[in-house]
Every structure is written in structure tokens, then in C-alpha cells.
Length: 455
Ligand code: NAD
Image (cartoon, rainbow, N blue to C red; front, side, top):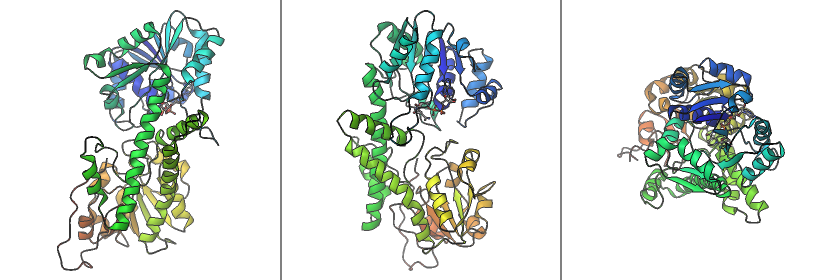
């Protein structure tokens, strides 16, 4: 099986590497010559755990290669995957399909013999048919369209790809289905559920999944706000509802609002599709507003925790990326929080294990630190924005010694209020009672909330 993967970003690179691991011959092609040059030298342009080894092994085995030459990649391919970006179109929230359409027109004249064109990018309903029209108009004849949306998560992308909850394949062409069955054969053998459906259903399923997950996050964030008002503990509420099999425990961790390359833009895109189709998705419209307001409100919480002003205060921010185990900064909450603190007069010093190269051009005026301890030295407050593992087990006593004021604002609930208070911190988290420093606490037993790591 020969596969051309058009686009070597998060999805194209991971998918291409995993298909080569399954035994296919894969050529990844990208218009970004610098990216391809790095990949040809087995140097990863993105941070993704396990990816360097997977790429190197399959390059060495001769099953995976990288090029900017689309004709060479498409030549002899049984399937050409399109995995280019579909960002939000400026202004109206529609998915920008210009990269998909450009790829389709470039591929069309290169097709020789029956080829399956597989759309892996997240695209609005109708795009598969539109791509088929573009290819036909540009002279492509013997081909069939498939929609095969991707559900991997950055940070655990390889595991997600190799052991997916399901695969969705949308096509009305039997030959295309047979090719897709062959490509995913190793997963068929592992009895991965595979849903064969039509193009439109496959396209919409991806958006419906992301909108639903975004809804779950937004719901627990609002419940966290309510907990604060009524004196309840959101961690226990989440556990109490998540143990119900109909609800499930995942995506019930409160935070500073979701970001990333998918949930915001895909929720916006499906809202546009729905409104154009005359079937508005009012829940999704609302969650987008709630999430945006939440990201903007987070700086206010930090300012309140410092007594109402951050002017000339030094604030240590730990974590910048939209989630741990990625260097992706797209729509990260830190992009709202840090400029708002700076506008209020704070001096922000920040550290992130992998995200600082991406973050630097987006966050002017920040002092970039080499580790957590440098960021904490002389700080008036520590703010956990992204729950990287290395921040979960910080030596709080050492942090306390380095800081000017013992203020900890935990926007991911990775510490227990009791532990933070015991170390002398004034502790603020989301949806839980605040921690009172041991020195100021009344002489009763401090209630513990147990260990509730967020994911
Ligand atoms: P990305 O921006 O990381 O990568 C896209 C790549 O495509 C870039 O390297 C770009 O140079 C290349 N490209 C653009 N036009 C090209 C062309 N004509 N020919 C060759 N290369 C071209 O994007 P991504 O995060 O991989 O997302 C790709 C698609 O997958 C999007 O639709 C996204 O919504 C979807 N998706 C992303 C994720 C994720 O976690 N990132 C998960 C599931 C689905």
C-alpha cells in the first residue's frame, strides 16, 4: 500500500508515521520547505511524545520519507490523504478551506490510475463533494472521495492513532472502502470499531464530537463557579457525576477555559454550518461565548488574589501551552491571561517545558525563565496555567522560600488546598474552598479534599 500524506503538521506527520508503522509506504509532502528539511534530517518540527523514535525507525526501514515534491509523492499512491490546516476564517468563524482546495487542485493533474482521495482535515459538511468537483474540473478522472476525520489528541497522538476508540470512514464508493479497509487492517485485526458511512455523516461526526467535548468542559467550568458561590467542592461534584456511566468522568476538570487548535475553531465552524443550514446550534453558540468570557476573566482572579492590584508585582506563570505535552500555543488561555496582567502593570516571568519557542513571538514583554525556580525567585504570586507533570510535584517549601509573597493561584486544581495551606500559601483554585495558611488557620482539623489530579 502506498500513501501520499499532503500536509506534515500534527495530524499529517503523526498519521503518516503511524501508517508507515502499520507497514505502508508513506511519503509526507509539505509546502513548508524548512519543515521538510528538518524532517529529512529526522529532526521533529513539533513536540509530540514518542514521535522522534517512530519517525526515525520507519525512515530507517525505508517506509517513511519526506519531500516538497507533490508529484513524486502522489506518483503510484493508492491513497492521497489531505491533512492540511482548516483554521477559522477571519471575521465569520467559517472554516477556511483555502488550503484544502489548493491541495485538491494541485493533486488533480498528478493522478494516474485509480486513486482514493482521503480528507483527514476537519472540514464542514459538503467539503468532500466540493473537493471531488475541484479535482474533476482540473482533469482528475479515476478517483473516489473518502472522509476519514482524525480524533487524535496532541500530547497522546501516537497512542490515540494506534489504539483509537473508533475510526470513521465516509464514502459511497466500494473500491475506496476496500482500500481504506486495507490501510486500517492492523486496527481491524485489533477489533477497533470502524464505522462506514457516507461523506456528509463522517464530516459532521467530527464536529459533533468536538462540540460535545467543548460543552462538557464548559459545563464543569460553570459548575465550578457555582461551587465557589455556594461553598461546594467541584472536584467531588465532578467525581459524583462522572461515576455515572451515562456521563463519564473524562472532560470534567475545571480550568481557565479551553483553547487549542481544534475545540474553539471547530465549535465556531459548526455553529456557522448550522446557522447556514437553518438549524442553529444554540448550545454551542453559548458555550463559545462562555468560554471566551472565562479566558478573559482569569486575570481578574489573579488580581483579586493579590488584593486588587498587580501593579509592579512580579508574577510567575508556569505553563503556557493550551495543554501539557505539546508545544502548541493556538488559542491558549495564557494568551489572554498574560497580556491582561501586563496591562494591569504586572511584571510577568514565565516558564513552560516545551512551549516557549512558540510563545515568545506571541507574548512580548515577558521575562522568559529557564525553569520554575528562576520564575519563582522574588515572585509575588505563582500561577499554574498548564498542568505539566513537572508542576504537579513542585517542592512547595522551596517555592515559598524563593517567593516574595506566598500566593498560589492554581488554575488547574493540581494541588490540594490543605497541602498548599500547610506550606504557608494563600491558595486559590477553581470551584473549591480556598486554602488558609497554617499560621492563620483556626486550631481545628483542616478538611482535606483528597487527591484529584486534572488531566
Ligand atoms: P498544522 O497547521 O499543524 O499542519 C498543516 C500542514 O499543512 C502545515 O505544515 C502546512 O505547511 C501544510 N500545508 C498547507 N497547505 C499545503 C499544501 N497545499 N500542500 C502540502 N502541505 C500543505 O495543522 P494540523 O494541526 O495538523 O491540522 C490539520 C487538520 O487536522 C485540521 O483540519 C485540523 O482541524 C485537523 N485536526 C487536528 C488535530 C490536532 O490535534 N492538531 C486533531 C484532529 C484533527
